Length: 113
Length: 111
Image 1 (tube, each protein chain N blue to C red):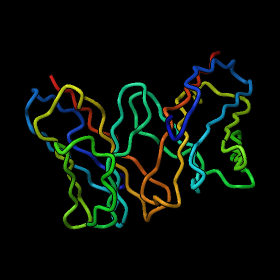
Image 2: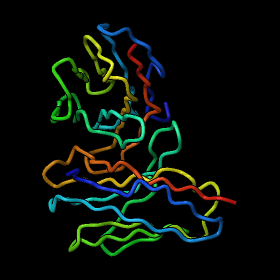
Image 3: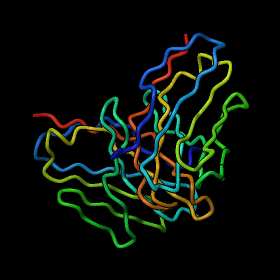
Image 4: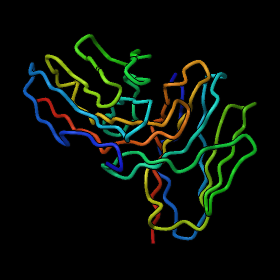
């Protein structure tokens, strides 16, 4: 596709449920990022991939959060045993290479009830 | 203290007026700077990169002051469509992968 695609756009999860969020980056983009954005805040860094290598996962808030990009293209962010504080918009971005312009997907709005 | 700080606003600007706001960053290793624009419930989109010598893109002018560690954005001849949240973004030389965002400055252009 022409842009970064994320699915689902909206997800309602019961507390304790596991969720998986998908990101399809722009074809050929080497770098992929996941961000978490709470209402009224700027995006907060979660993790970064260069191809299939996860080079930085310092922003993942707990070990309930796990991200992968096994073939260097599509990425999945998994959240286990969701909590109410996980409710946020999860944004995925890709760039041609590190340090270049990052293009964002429309995000997945996660609501934990 | 957050690594990137912005005045949250809102900046209420009459149509046609000029508005300017700053963003400060705390890490001197910050190397690349950007302004992103985010509309309500939409994803951030790159507005412009910020170069050391300052740069202009139509009605938008960005400046970088490395000594004082801040960047600025000026919008001239404001349009109603400029109403948005403007996110300041820095990229550090020691962390090429991580774009660090400010919380955003809200601009509201009124008729």
